[in-house]
Amino acid sequence: MKIKVLIIDDSALMRALLTEVINSASDMEVVAVAPDPLEAREMIKKSNPDVITLDIEMPKMDGLEFLERLMRLRPTPVVMISSLTARGSDATLRALELGAVDYVSKPRVDLGNGLGDYAIEICDKIRVAYSARHRVTASQSPPVTAARQPEPKPLALESRGLAGKLIAIGASTGGTEAIKSVLSGMPENSPGIVIVQHMPEAFTPSFAKRLDGLCRVRVKEAEHGDRIEAGHAYLAPGHSHLLVRRRGGEYVCELSSGPPVNRHRPSVDVLFESVAEHARDRVIAALLTGMGKDGAKGMLAIRKAGGYNIVQNEATCVVYGMPREAVSVGAVHECVALSDVSGRILAALSPRERMAARA
Image 1 (cartoon, rainbow, N blue to C red):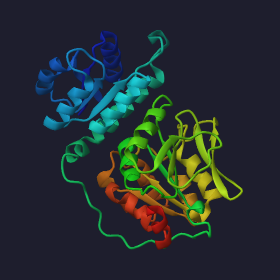
Image 2 (cartoon, helix red, strand yellow):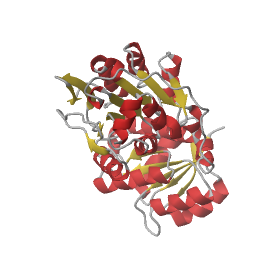
Image 3 (cartoon, rainbow, N blue to C red):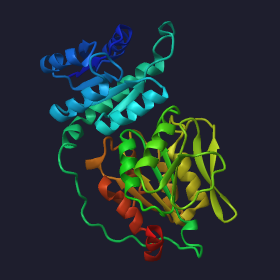
Image 4 (cartoon, rainbow, N blue to C red):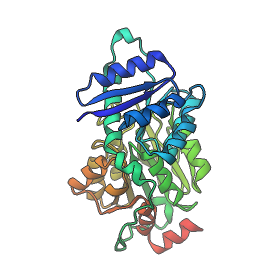
């Protein structure tokens, strides 16, 4: 049985391109196309699509307004089609907040050169959205609460207090909302936080700015040489790997333009392996929702170095791929609901550290 896809885009060229891409895949088909959301409403009733691709800027009704109504009245997995602009990145992040599963950028290439990686990316994201369809519906229900976990053994405490502690977070598909949830639960003086979210470079400045406005910790896009301070979070820019190095008695951010790892730059494995090397048993790591295996190898390195690892559980992930891989290699101490991740991170601190974080 093929995945039924509805395309909503005001560009005839984009509708034709997406139709060609989707119909070329053996496991999916386009069941309807619409130039705007108003026409799409009737098509949804008639074709009952499994997944919708949705443009943001359209006449009559923009994609965000339509998405908000769709998720309220008929929750359906949606993949946003976005332009890589500052305005487009802000709108896409808002779409993810409203319930879109993922996004894909509009191609900038001459169609005469072929669809190549773009076709693969679109089809992969439609498959992920289809697999997440029951979670889209479940998101309208009360959140899942994990069973009470035993208190982890607090990690080693340096005499300088929080300066020696480090929190590392990795995520991919569904991660923008998951990261927001975790950071929102962190007190304003929590240990320094370093983050990798698989995301294009045009999006990471907007994402960091949005998080900074919502969370008690200060959030910024990481820059090479940034000193990692308590009460601050550093998001890997979409064009570079983020690593942590030790400089004297402090941690600093290092950016690298090295080759992609697990097809990603930034890569969670690169970040996790660097904190395992330089922070060792002072690391608390969290691996959140995402497709693939990025982060599992690095999380195992953290565990072997004496750090503490937490992953988001399957029930609350958009895609359980990355956490599942970390569990399968024996890297994980706890697997908990998203709503409990920040609490479990804080529980891995000593009472004295928790007091300092909340001061």
